[in-house]
Image (cartoon, rainbow, N blue to C red; front, side, top):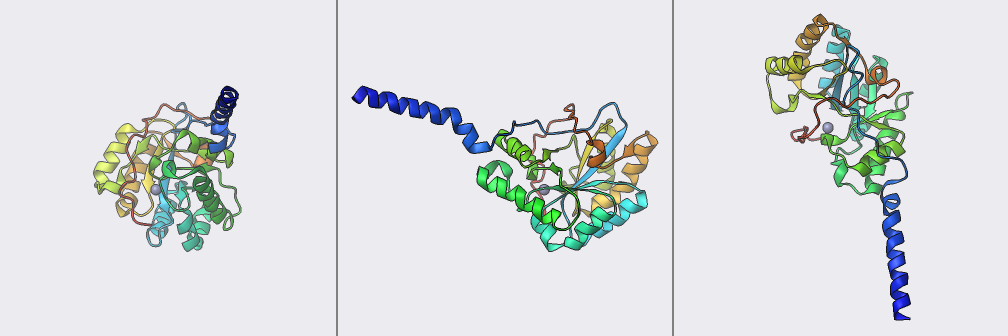
Amino acid sequence: MILSMRALSFHILCLVLCFSPLLTCGCAEARAPVYSGNRMVHTIAITFDDGPHQTLTPELLAMLDTLEVKASFFLVGKMVDRYPALVREIFARGHTVANHSYAHKNSSLLSPEEFAEDIRRCNEAIERIIPARVRFFRPPGGNFTKNVLAMVEDAGLHTVLWDINSRDYTGVSASRMSARIISKVAPGSILLFHSGVTTTINALPGIVASLREKGYEFVTLDAMLSEYTAYHHGEMVTESSESSDQPL
Ligand SMILES: [Zn+2]
């Protein structure tokens, strides 16, 4: 009897271990994040994290209009709730609007339930304001786990990172930022910038002019990833990229 009880316990343990992935991360396959677009096409996607920013997003939008550049904005849900008019403005000017979580917490440290709620709230905040479905997610700080990737797919989104980090949050000068980006850029590059940094706005004219001279065209993520074909030849994200984010 004791032996059969032990055998039963063993079988129950096996069943729990076999099905535990299903308990923790929904049912979608974890799919690799997108680091860049097609390496055969001379397009570049400029992306801005952490907006909307009360004062600098309007300045950034004006600069992008002047440069005739369409870009992509990974917005934080609680900031979307705070500044809905800016979200309408971003969308109205033809930029891609995407999900950067609701509370800007480290996705890899949240429970599955907390993470699912966090991305759902951000999507809902955005989709209440603009008539478009959110397609892309970028985890705060670029932190993710296999479970995070699977749950993003479950939510109908694709995880998009970057292959070139401007490091604009470090206080780097506009000229050094520009030189570094221009030396590293390749067809299909996805550039990471932030919405609340004045230096970024000042650096954009030089970066855009130099890259146009090299034959590059600037596109939104919607355009670059229209068929969601992932390429992974870019530099891997290894640093905590946004450790000096402004408090949100
Ligand atoms: Zn961020």
